[in-house]
Amino acid sequence: MRKVHYFYNPHTLDYERIYFSWRHRLGTVFRHLFVGLMIGMVVFLCSIYLFASPREAQLRKENLLLQTQFDILSRKMDESFLVLKDLQERDDKLYRIIYQAEPIPTSVRESGFGGIDRYETLMNMPNSQLLVSTAKKMDQLSKQLYVQSNSYDEIFHLAKNQDERLKCIPSIQPITNKDLMRISSGFGYRIDPIYGTSSFHTGMDFKAEVGTDIYATGNGTVVSSFWRQGYGNCVVINHGYGYETLYAHCHQIYTQIGREVVRGQVIASVGNTGKSTGPHLHYEVRVKGIPDNPAKYYFMDLSPEEYDKMFEIAENHGQVMD
Ligand SMILES: [Zn+2]
Image 1 (cartoon, rainbow, N blue to C red):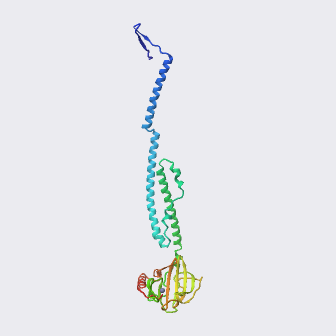
Image 2 (image 1 turned 30 degrees about the vertical axis):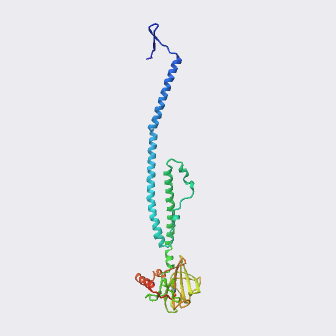
Image 3 (image 1 turned 135 degrees about the vertical axis):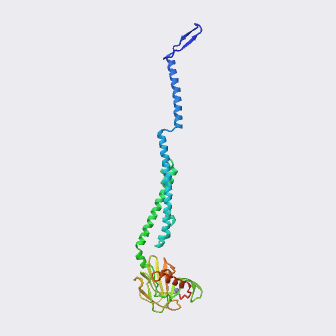
């Protein structure tokens, strides 16, 4: 029902009706409308601030879920790193040693990807720290797996050629020595038979009569066959894979430079040439140019018991014939 307004007229002592103008009425309407709008806006802003819309609530939930999934992924990658580390250690300390390959340097295994801008796009995203650290971890893991995979390829190649390798690596005694009585002196510091001073004996001496056969101890190629100061008549065989053997003080040499020889082939005879105190063979095994203890290279010739005995003789016997 429409409201009717009156006012009290003291002159007529009566209530008289008020008729508002259209302007006054319009003003009232706009005033009410303005107040209503202001209240509505305040309520709207408060509700936005205090209460999330269903869409926002859904997005927040999804965001939380994604963060949890990233955390789980990160933990799984940490576990994968541990497994990979174990593989790397076994590779360096076992497989590569068996096939005499150098361990892979840590700098190669742990080298990262180049370029500082690699993660720039991620840096501008929300939760950038989480994204960048996860991406970095993923990159490291894939790089290390790639290096490890290459290493296994190399080991596989070495294993495939193992037959050939076993034929070449020195692994018998250079003269017939079943009872081990011909070993005169082993590898290491010994008293020099001529000067009487302590010096490093770089090979193993076998005493034998002049003319006794000397065998190539592994397949290879003769790279040196002539008289050398100190060594007298000597033969050097390159076996490949970093191995060389030297046979010194020979009486006669039955081979020449460039000839291929096989294990057990007679290449020379025992003599007393060069710096020598009696007929004997001075035998050296060199690995990548460095003399190694020849006693470690008779594994195809001796039983484990004989091997122990030979090692003992070679260690304790001090009579160097040079
Ligand atoms: Zn010697």
